[in-house]
Length: 425
Image (cartoon, rainbow, N blue to C red; front, side):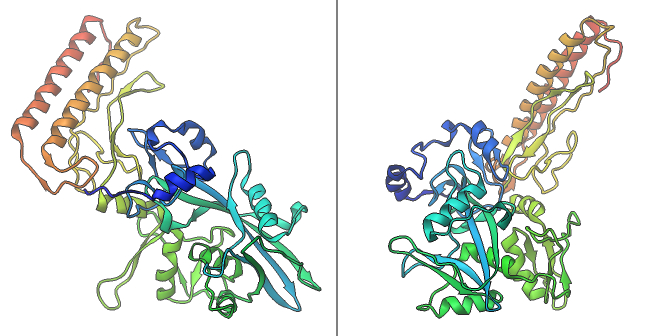
């Protein structure tokens, strides 16, 4: 699998100088425990200590593309509405005449919450200060600014809805230097688009379009098409209201669902049903097509004293790639031929129980890794990409089988020498 690596030079120059980019160029040196604890949307770290985006893969596998921080780049934005003379208005800003109109907001600073950052940025960019906590409500964090992201650096925003209600006059606002802040009439999203276009042929910032569509709704006026994931049965919901999403027709559903991370597979024949996958199922499907990130979990001693074998997982989507000894992987990957042994003993009555547990974990781990390596080496391709073609290697398979027999024999000898009461294989 081809790995596309890119970090915009501006990230390493202006970004580092201005403080919005990590100066560290090696993501394995980042304190991931701290960042994982602070993440608005949970994500994973690969076995070689590189961040794994929780969203669908991008065109940039490694590097930061045009974002500053490795992993999550957290921002917050304010969706401010007010009614005046019966017309709803939305507060938008334009950083410069050549830029799109967007929601006021910015990066979340260390020690800030999402709502605190949104309200601070609102005051900085428009002069509007909100102190009444009953006026605002935070929405769930979501993906943002997809075009600038990579698989190792992605943008997340915390939207904060602020409804000022019915006012006699709209509050006065002041934009920052070289930028404009304005109340834009918006009975619905098409109305907002038309009002923005009337301002020197302006446009809405694409990364904020879905938040504005959600804000302006209504979602439940039309109840023609609802959507359910074909894999897990999850029904599409509005991210803020948690109400079921409905669309006017199939075409609208197909166009809008990807903005929520869902994947739409159009029917191949005229009149054939379309298929849709929710966010989690879409991630698994995407990994299956483009290549899983393989990780081999170690043998583990369970709470009941038993020892389990090792499994092969995709650390990006969590898919279990082998479900038992020698079982074929669900997407066509080779099974790792990993041994699954379950050993039981009464540690209280049998003084060597703890020793045998440690010995079993050691032997099973070594055996599993040897067998996994032999199986993967028999395939033409990278472990983190789909093999181009399976290559038969009887010698590698025989070596894995011999390793299995030898390790099993050694383990049984240890058990017998120490008087194990029960052995299950």
